Image (cartoon, rainbow, N blue to C red; front, side, top):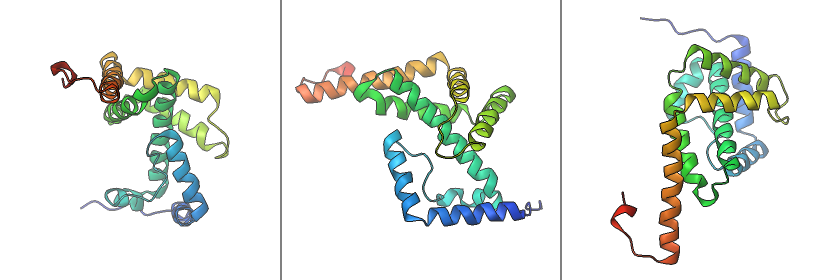
Length: 181
């Protein structure tokens, strides 16, 4: 039987601060608005039941992991926004987020180091200050590296398929066999 790590005073303090923050209606509203702005979940709400054990066993590590996921997904979204995908953006983002989450389950040591440097830079500045340009550039490079050319093709295909289906519905064109493929 393995022993559970004993939370430090700092871990307990972070957990108390997080709980207080989650109970603050102004912070919750701001977090919800942020999720709306980025078009998806940024893990700004309550800890999901299936993640509660991870949070309780290592509150600081869990919060840092969630923050890193938020940074990575925001970086992906910004890259896709820069591609001017229009109405296809949500489909591309959803596909990209899924692929990125899969690819980052076991990242290389080099990618881990780059992500930790980005997280450290983010955590060292105020919450109101955006990620510095050097860190944003590093994050884009990590995303470009982690996602394969085939992944990017799947993201493009998701956006194109959504647009094709949407135009057919709006213009009321008949469905074709290749539209469902």
